Image 1: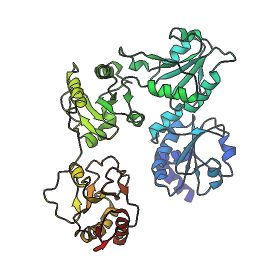
Image 2: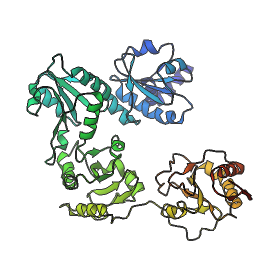
Image 3: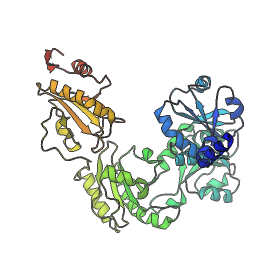
Length: 489
């Protein structure tokens, strides 16, 4: 009877049971024995109490189910199997590592979503670099959705093939590699003896740049990595959820529209070509360009830029996000001749554009002891160079913030006799948090002291009144009324 009940319960949750079985649990006693049985394995080292581990768990399980039969996913609980975790240098959670035939091959530095893990690990199957034997092999390999890196080597004693293969082993999770001993395969692209060619994806072919780039430096893993990084995207890459962080290290313009390179290459390149024209026109001005599928970034467009993405009639939305976090939006409709985009760029480089800031309205009355700050008033209040400001970033739904509220109010009332100290708060959910303030959770509190506005001090102390007063006494200069008493600080 009990067995029947168990089977009935399990049949209600087949997907969850399957996912759990698809992630192999390893430990000190069986890690080496089991891991050597798989050509490629992704291992998650975790702790049950770790919040990031809990967030990753369902995505890891979904990826394991999709990868079943190609790449094995496994996990090690480091609270129960510390010997294995120490052996592989695990010092934080979660740590993900790629193993090949039981040997630690490389760290996993890819996305943490199920889809991202799936695509990243699919690239880990098979050899590090595909051996090409003919022109037909070369054409087949480079006719791919992603870019291709191809090394052509003579095979002699001075060949750089071993270094190329070492680079391929290290970088295969990010790029596709192939090699050939037939030097003739490189001749038509300007390589007469040995060399490396970077083939950009055929779907991104355009008249503004070459589709193939030749590597000309001395070959090392580092120099090849830099070459690929600097050239793989070209004038106007396709930004995705996986590569956006790599692209946003520079000031970046992005055109968002109904881009779909799987079903509509020509339509996707229609708008990209117009962006490419502006990218070539404004080349060398410090701004990079990209295009993206609007559907992938709907939340970001609405939350970060205030754009109503249901509007637009199929025309691209255009934004600029600088590496300093400044944001601009093109309010004029994207015209098919590209003139509206040129006007937008002319205004941007001339400094005529007003930055977009997500902000609540500035309060008409702000008489409470704890001053309300919004993004639009942040500079006027927090960056006032004559006042020391303690600023709390909070969320309306945060229980810890609600618990802190009476203590924070008491602090503000205690310090109210000194006009040069301001105790303030800002709703970080509805206002842009300025650069220099790292807010990952709530409440997060900083002190923007006089003379140190560019280097705000994060508060890491206790949540009682005496804790805040002690912190202020230790940080503030010169004389202040703190805790109702004058102190030489």
